[in-house]
Image (cartoon, rainbow, N blue to C red):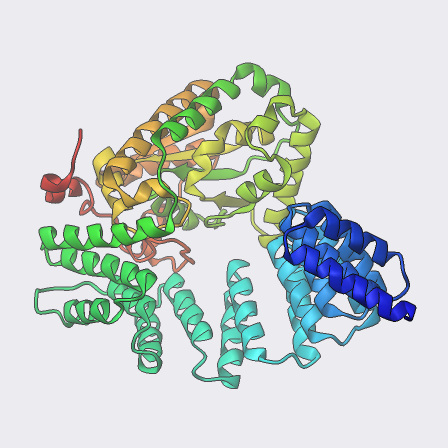
Length: 544
């Protein structure tokens, strides 16, 4: 029997052992075979599969690295390795794998596309744009998908003209390409072009009458005036038609709740919101009050005056952070500030949570032994990312509401930071959250009692931050702002070290980009319609 035949039989036996769950024996057999010149490719692939199945990522990376060396022109093997590296937080190594491959195969459009995704996830936006363009240059299949991705990237970079041009190019190739149409409509909304946005959503509905998100967006953009409004029937029919699509039904129920609220049918509106949130619970983890309380207690115990003194960075930068509970008025404040000529809106930047995941895991435990030099390094990276996105801005607002969780770290990173905290009535704020479809990680948002509980914990934490950070925090009371805005805004601008500008009172006419769930609310002049809104729903609010 030839060596080749013996090796093939040995490999078949190793695969049998592997399939039978006899992992240790299979691993030993693979390792013996991999030393031979023959069969290295399938054996290395099988080894990588075994290591991934058994949770040994480092060994899987070793096997896949050897495999890419064995077959250097295989994009599949390169991609397998890059995906594992990126998932493990090694984005630079993942990018290096594609770059190595492209040194050999510079015309590989798919490799350029994959590298663009890595750069995008690493917030290296300029590099991502270059790779998307290279993918197009080398004739990638489905170029409309690339243009749509470019549009989203440009929109995130607040390069609105480039974003619209990218969507137009996608639609020139494929006029009924729904991802490009939907993202274009979203961009039109963010620019305040209500009628154009709604027309684009309606265009989507002509192509796909069951597109729940498009119909929901139209409902949110337009105010219903009476019980005979056609939108009510459209939403009810769409909910029935989407019986087997929980995600679509959820967004439609939220839109129906909003539409019924418009006409003052609060009982039916609350019933729609309740149905939406019951569906939302399916996609979110259970809210654990005990664990959330422990987490807040942990933050309070860790971040004290001694920690701040030891960990504070040395920089003099004074970025502006706007934070608070979701739906507390942070978007409104950002839009008002955006009307000031010296302020550029950043929107809900994700740089800080992204840096936390990359540099401070596990958070906050890793900060117990952190050095000022490490804090300084992360602060510099944050500033670099923001400067790359807004190179000409004097002041940029970072309006990610849940940054209120990280104010101790923010103060350590930027001792001169200006923190604007937006606070709203507990019941109004909690109801507004319950009435909004929010992200999967906000487990408290799908049950009103849990939202009220989380609000109370947020207040406990903010009380700690205010005692610890003192004059670094400026509190904007939502109710005071909408009732008598000028004194509040004058004090706020003084806190920020900026001169008074009356344009801040006319923010709704400024035409700035609004990237927020409440984008239509912040297009209106200040009003008190949302103050004491909870009274409309008092019979449905459980608890204090």
